[in-house]
Image 1 (tube, rainbow, N blue to C red):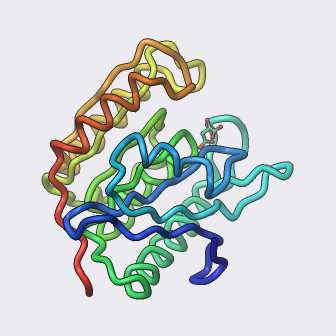
Image 2: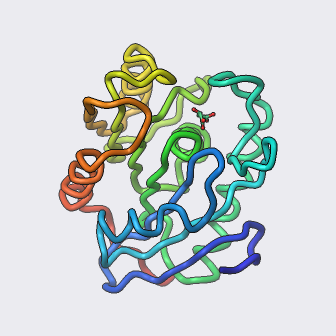
Image 3: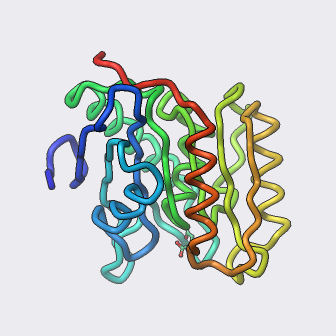
Amino acid sequence: MSADLGFVHIFHPPATADAPILLLLHGTGGNEHDLVSLKEALMPEAGVLSPRGQVLERGMPRFFRRLAEGVFDVDDLKQRTQDLAGFVARASAHYGFSREGVVAAGFSNGANIAASLLLLEPATLGGAILFRAMVPLVPDPLPSIPRTPVLVSNGRRDPLVAPAETERLTELLRTAGADVTLAWQDGGHELTQADVAQARDWLTRARTPAPRKS
Ligand code: MLT
């Protein structure tokens, strides 16, 4: 664990030169350790960059402030998205990987800031896996993220994310040019084995560019 580069984080280099770096983004109340085992299940040879969210909500780390459940503080979200993009840029220079090789894997609040990175700071990511994501904000104009691979893995019976919200997010990212795969899960807001299995297959197919020394 390191507190350098602006965020408390974990970094593990990839085991092979062509493997991606997974930017692991935890849900509300999580921390930088939460999703490291998910990386093992998704792609053991991938590297890991796993920051801890800097907002505390009643002691629970998050990546940006919310005003109520599902109601986001958009000014804070914009600032925190910029801060996270700056961190990934500094980590890329410090650890020697290219940002095109970075694939976000975020859950809930972490998926929402990953979607916000795609929409506001698109140079930060080569792709993204969004587990239980919402529309974080709608930028005007939309960015152009042609062919950026994105997996949206949401639950049909999620009490926090209505199916229409999932479809709105998918449409928004497609309109921006992303190559979006929507994986509907049978369950609710919790992550399941089916999520992980489908994300693993998607990640293997997505053929993200290799991280290089920059
Ligand atoms: C959460 O609990 O993290 C919410 O459902 C999503 C968010 O607030 O970003």
